[in-house]
Structures are given as C-alpha cells and as structure tokens.
Image (cartoon, rainbow, N blue to C red; front, side):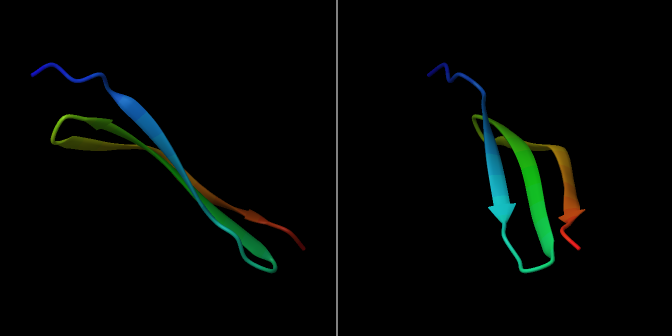
Length: 41
C-alpha cells in the first residue's frame, strides 16, 4: 500500500505563551519539522 506523506500543525494556545509544532507523517514514519513558542506579552 502506497501512502502520501502529510503534515500536521499542532497548536497549544495559552494566555501569554502559544506553543506550536509541525510534524510529517509518512506511513509509520513520523518526523518533526519545526516547533517553538510565541510569547504574547
């Protein structure tokens, strides 16, 4: 079975800090593309 890789954006909203992550899923492989935080002060 051939699968197409896809990306997922995860967001963790907070009051002063917003976290995020982007991962890529390809079959059973999961790869972290980027992650970080935005400080909303």
